[in-house]
Image (tube, rainbow, N blue to C red):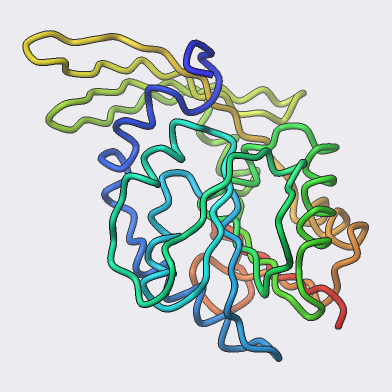
Length: 252
């Protein structure tokens, strides 16, 4: 909701500007490297928690049929405003929470990138979301996602960060609650409106899931061949990796 400080509301207007340092093409290359290793060709892709749709559009440009799903209407509005040329159909965007995922058919692969899994701060809802992903995957289909490690999230405690573009300025503070295992980002946003600046507030939270915990969720949902990977690398993670990737498959 626009008036709710939790979630992506006003931040959607400047999200792409604040994430301009993310090499989305490299992320897409990494995703495709996993696609090429699959036993069945990947043609249809679900981009879960797609945000402003940058990865959705890149994958569509590379010839995949893409469905982008996100909880935030504001982020999806930005996604639908983009007009990147594609070699196939433009992505289809749907506004849904992960745990209530409901597609018109099945997909060959599901991706959930940029620590979106951490943003599901209720483990029960994440379990349900993984069950829904499993339901809408083709037999043998791939589920690929990443998380920020618990050590990384805990290390953000007490941090103060700044992001700015020509028309937006953001001050965000972080607090990690060890008992709840949640990192909270309190954001003060200043958005330029001609000669004036408008101030907004948002709160975002991420849950510090352990790798073992996530593997148990995946197994419970019916996934098999579950592997951990290092940050944007086709290898097992090292102790210094702050971002971990997981691949899991539906039996078939």
